[in-house]
Length: 186
Length: 264
Image (cartoon, rainbow over all chains, first blue to last red):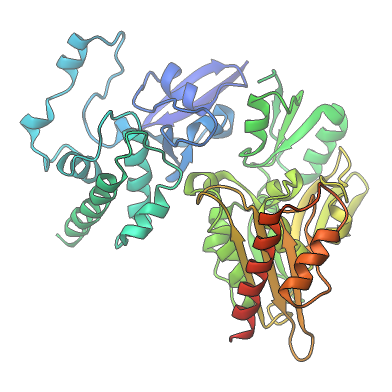
């Protein structure tokens, strides 16, 4: 066992953990943030993508001890929805926690532009890969604000969508880039 | 994953000391992108992990007084791909920025790839083809190896259990007029099925062709035309015989890189 403190979405989270604990497990089981998904556990699918000190990583292929003392941003850190972890997730608790997106509108101020673009472009079907896709694109668009569609394809090469919704995800990436540029100009 | 002790030395010497103290079951972890996958399937079962993440001297890119480009072993692909390089060194950054995927490049390191010595990793072809020198730190100090000495002929490395790779010294920017790397992979994030590096020396130095991924270690060809290079790799020792598609890939990639090198 080892004591580790990781800052998750601005909040320090400290725990005694087994050295084998993956960053993904720390985020989900210790910090209680289940938006980061466990897909393949072998650094293929990208559903567990998070930012570690501002750089994108697959949290299933990083040990929590490697992230000790560092800062992690997860999908929950992008917008003010669901800031507190749920004790037990039920349909009822979800309903209380999330404002229905329709009520917000796709350009709602409390969605991150990448999230809003996913909503507007219908860039998800089952939604399992979405948190990883959004994190990967959010991180990439900060590096390259004027991407081509091919750039977006390359940026999400490490993220798999089994609903094969890639075209709409690329649409969303382009839309988000435009919105982010407009925000930067304003 | 088997249980292990996680050790965080603050210096390279301390890391070497810890490796000696914990014996051959201890293993170095840099980014961990290959090692953790192996540990999850228990094909690697280290009893202790010695992390090099806290050793600042081992990361970073700098030009030596001799003009050599010194790349610290724990320099990540992401950092290497963004390094401000000139001359043929830009090809190093280009190769580092076009392998695996972005999240893996954030964590993965050049030294990690070389020590893991996966035959299909681009870095093996890059250091072999450019004749880089590898600085290895052990209990009795630093020794500098050629790629031929660093990689074991049948695959893997000749590193002792208490040695670490400290840095990779690439030849100066004027050592080659042009270096071109090409590879074939099935999907963007896959490791190469075949890779070829052509390095053109100044004057009448000629072009050196190196073929990677199809043999346990990259093959430095003596021939200069694609068909002969493919035949030479076919005859090179180690591993099973080349199959048709590998031969085709070697021939095609060699022709492609040669024409790029000669075309400028």
